[in-house]
Length: 579
Image 1 (tube, rainbow, N blue to C red):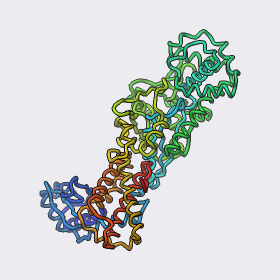
Image 2 (image 1 turned 30 degrees about the vertical axis):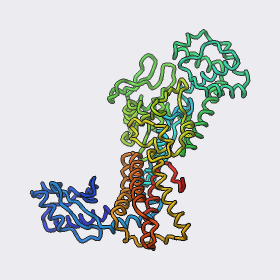
Image 3 (image 1 turned 90 degrees about the vertical axis):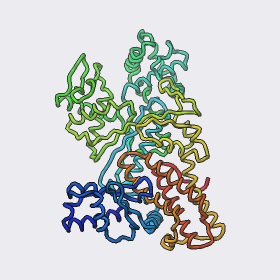
């Protein structure tokens, strides 16, 4: 409908321009929706924009524009408001057209081709495989998967990827933690478990399965351990232990390393698949190392003259690019840092020809963005093609009590536990109820409620109510003809027009949610549509005796159900027909 009003407005401006009454026509015409329908269905500020160039008062110019508007079956009347806004009030026929559009396009209603020809890579979650996914990771998973769905619905070619940090220090700490639990199971642990090791019960389970696999074969390394500093000394002790295990176990260190990595990564894959989160590729950091990509990227940074050596380590001069301090690329022991791997990984992303790359990182990585972009610029890459969305962790509440979370200490609620308690639908929906960069309080008790207080239940109930109507009609032997066989002009009541007015907004919400990278816009819209439908359902008899009116009202209801289903699908939430 906006297109038809825009076309009429364009015609009026063209006429005035031909008459020499305005100097030119803007390339694009903005039409906004007033907050209150009493002020019209659409509004334009074009008279205010052109007033200075014409030397006329905006209200006078607005009057000329209105007078020049061509006749339109969609526009009922116009008003000039305030300093010169033009408000458009639409005919009921315009809203009937929307209902017909929904019934015709069905599961494609709301889709567009705004992203045609653009290939986007989305990387999200990418949690270190050092333990199960917890509820904090779930927010990034729900956000990333929902955004991918929304962008695809907007015509973008989307490639989802999980970056597996399988070559860094945290994986070595996990391997050392597994080894200590392996010794503990044999009664051969010579020291208290280190504070900075991974202490979760899952580490004991991995160690037990490792012992079943290798028996006592790895135990010999403990006999030749050097005199370690007190384990309370943290990093010094754990790093000493890691170095010793690598040297003493030789090839068997890979067995130890893989024992934790493979099991945890398999669990993460299974958990995300069960959550409806799918990836085109799981990208291994180790593969970057093995292919020499990190060596190549670091050498290129050195060649560009932005690196220096200090105390045996290789540093990137990040302060030259407004970072607060320079960053280590290669430690004095020759090991590359995460930063070096990330530079190589992003260079490889660009080499794959993506139009745009979107990374979703935890909010604690905000300082990481400028240094990665700086390194990309140093490599001669267009850093504006990298977009980083910062996702705040969710804070879990049970009633009014905050649930404590500590990954290293093993005190956390896993994503799988959350899904089992509240269900995938509630989890997916609640996770996208706020902007990604805003704190999210996840209320477990609310998510389980079967009442209108629970937004996902409220929306799904609206969808199910429509199908309840269809079942009631079928029980009475009443059928519904094809969409083109229904007379929609009979729908004239204000609540019917208001409901169709909400339907009309869905394609626009889909487009802006993609543009702004904000799935919560879809969630908010669905709540509004469900509320409008429940109001209509409670105030209007739908299965009336008059056949034409019954057909029209059922068609309107089916259009609501279709739009609810389309929006829920974008968020990875089911649309049940019965509850």
